[in-house]
Image (tube, rainbow, N blue to C red):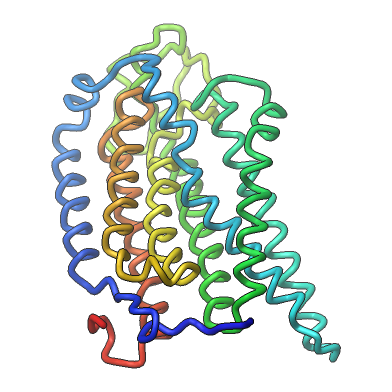
Length: 315
């Protein structure tokens, strides 16, 4: 039986302004602190090859990115239910199929790549893909089942926006900034084999100046410290926390608790990345600022679209 999202009936609560405002104040404050004490904090935290740090780094993107795969399943289900055969609808269906399949495959590969890269366990990438495939297929099927049982275009819109936010933040802005700044990671500065020393440390606002004697290429991942892509990906878990109650209405009253869980996961991943010397505090907090800001805007759209009361009024 098809159903529509009904926040009043299912008692799904709006998050409101203050949780986001408090979070943004916190990450901006930490970013300001980092602007003065980045190097000192990195020296204090660094622990090479820390097992817990490696494990959290390898799976840090998974929760939020699995949400994107679930959203792909929802989109596919809505597509299959659309029986209209005029040219506009056929074109619409082709675009949606292409978008959802590309997102599901891309996120599956991206999660597996983190497990099998130097951010994780240095295993063969095909092994990483095989490990993640059952979970990715499960997430896709879950989204499909939910989308099949739901008859609400709002959920389709929100699922589309979920993927777009991921692309803009984790796969877009993060990569653009990385290639502009080319900031060396802390672990590279203390690794003599790279040809870099502490003299090559640069603040987050200073583009790195490549010079002779460096044994890594300009495009090397070790020169992509700013901002933290892992923190961006982990912050998308906040978006998943806000998305899940729309899929499972029984979680509606736990929306703020889920939000808090997403925030804690973001900070845990950020800490582990600093622990391993992969990022400075400014790298992680800058990523948190713009990602949380975009998710805030995404949530405004959700609550304005679904709540037929004053925006952010608690139900």
